Length: 259
Length: 259
Image (tube, rainbow over all chains, first blue to last red; front, side):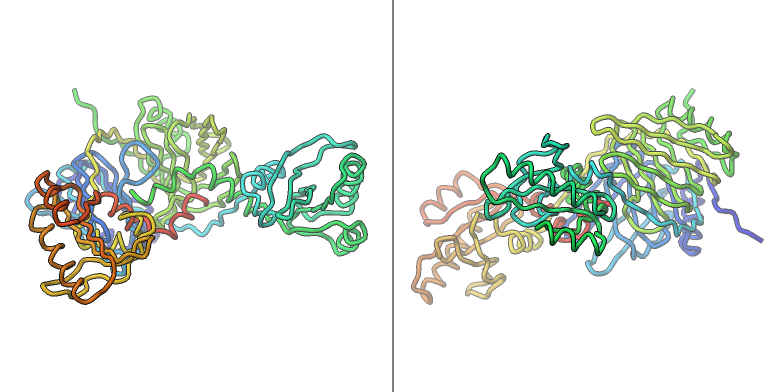
């Protein structure tokens, strides 16, 4: 007999809520409690959250989140590994969570409970990050060290017959660098294309020029071709580019975990 | 007549779920949907989350979170300001969220819904961070620039008759610095205590010594006393100390928002 994926109590008394929550802890359910609560946290720092209507989330591994009705950040949180206990005390529902290393404890006190939901969830789905070729360009512009330390981009998508150079810039020794970026394993065409750009630029500029083909990978024959043409290969991972973009987009969000 | 704080559907069909969710969006409710889903995100980067049982959270301001049953991090999230739409399509529940600046979109597709809950929550409770005096010590040790740029702690809680020096170290000019930390507005006793430590150290060490009283604030008369004793005052905010500690504790967590 298959147990229900979810059980719900609507507007329970605090003692009904406490016993349902204790049951959910014992069965290692993911728990959602909505109601009016205050929160005290003590650990490396201490915090107090005054009374308000929120959602408390305790996951199957003991991770805890308290969410206000607005904003994507939790107002309180604790990583997995906490030990929890729920009880009804003087007309209130108290949920305690304690974690070692570092020692921290959180107490959520509800004077009113709107909903208690206990869920049994199974999730082994993989998470994949991707970046398009254009996003890889942006990532290198925003974080040039993805290409090499000391690289300074000057321009991108610059018209150079017979087409457009993806990125050009200077290396740490002041040499001009022309970069061709590919999202997948780079073929011979990519190497020949880059070589043509460099030839075209050489007719106009009297300085040392390096050509870099940046891609997740390159074929063996292409590696030989690059050597013949005097060009270089740099491994550039679309996933790392996606992460770098995500990071720049959400720099402000780093304050998240400082509360 | 007061509307219910929460409404819940258990094991709805996808079309029942879609219509309840559309209603919740129209009323600006906080929405919780538990079920088996996959997620596609496209924005500055792209991501795919394969099928699994999770909790989707859409807040009253349009912030979105997808939580797996373990870990305190959301696997997908979007800040407030997204526009949402839910529909039932070929036996599946599709929830689309679109946000401008930066343009990003998320699609959560459920093939099974365990629960839909719509909550109307009000929360204006303040959040306060505190640090104890001991935590303020730790914060200065971990982030000495809280005291002053170039300060290098050497030791803490060092026995110096008639007691213990909170922190001592060197300033950027190599002068010895003795620090006394108070959690609240510092009184005359704190200044006199610091002065005694410095006298005691002077009898043993033949080098220039600075004495710094660090506290959130200091009384006017104490400021005069400090000047007379040749000591300095530094404003040290317990909240900033708490934030600094939180930061060091959760440095690893900064990867959170890079997915």
